Length: 205
Image (cartoon, rainbow, N blue to C red; front, side, top):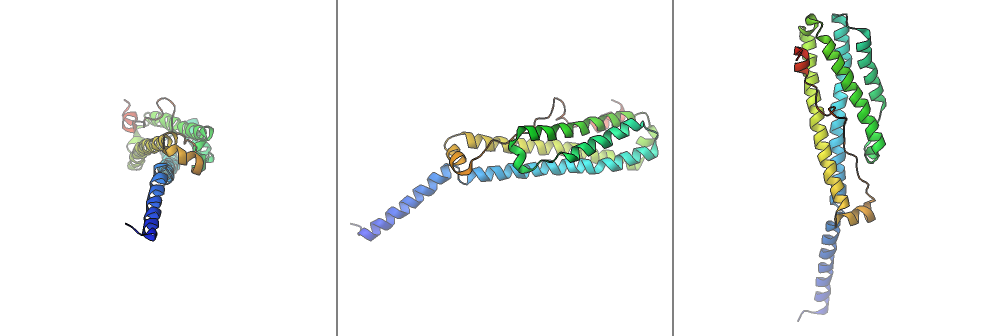
């Protein structure tokens, strides 16, 4: 028969193991892990949009210097970019649908302005044939594709996090320990979540 100290040690060890399993089941560790993963994915989205914003000044300058493109078209791209850069969204704002929607709308306006510019470029074959402009178009196309990929990954991470904080038993830790709130997925307007086909626009198709 086990001695009293040995039995107490065993009971303590059993209790510690049971407690750790219970806490793990309640999402003590998995909830913040899922939240940090979603925030990291959002950082990728912002980096992709920043890359597009960085390309726009060079794109506009090249178009302006090489062709007499309508001033309003170029100003539309410049103004849309300027407005979008003013809309700041931190990871703490990802639980606020209104702020996420404002960010989405601003970026959607940039995409629309770029689309109008690319259609206008069709009227200037000399501009399209320039190596510098063609290189910028290639970079823009890659950036638009990257934006879509990062948004898809972010939405997947948000779905995982939101599911965890709403389902048993992880919802216990989410409410009682972390005070977790659902994060907002990126839901662009109809058609805005599809990267513009730069090649098709440049070829007039």
